[in-house]
Image 1 (cartoon, one colour):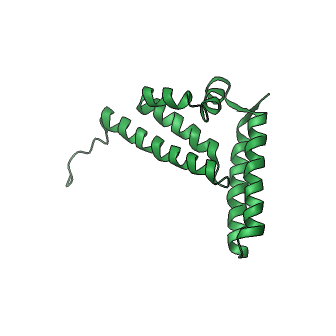
Image 2 (spheres, rainbow, N blue to C red; image 1 turned 45 degrees about the vertical axis):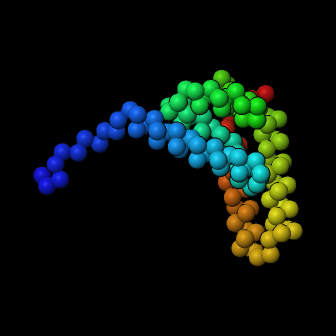
Image 3 (cartoon, rainbow, N blue to C red; image 1 turned 135 degrees about the vertical axis):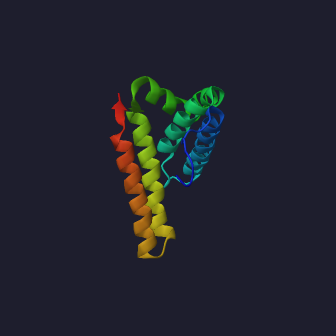
Length: 133
């Protein structure tokens, strides 16, 4: 064998670091999604929580007790879904921003279609998550 034996094993510290990096990048996208509602926030928050759970209990605890994102994470971890009111609020804000952007700011049909496509993907993703009453 020319290259020798490759175990494919990553050390535990390296795995945790990778999870923490992915969680932090995902959380950055979630914060961007708060500012730019065309980017879905919830999937990025949940991905961050899952990564932090595997990478750092301290970061997971911090995120799940965060005033803005904590309720979303706790609802998902405890009940496996999102509250109906949270979904309605998120979808309303997202689609208001998308329609305002598409109609008032973007001037090419291609860009308008792209923004609407991203919003449709975000909507489908959110609707696939179990609804908690």
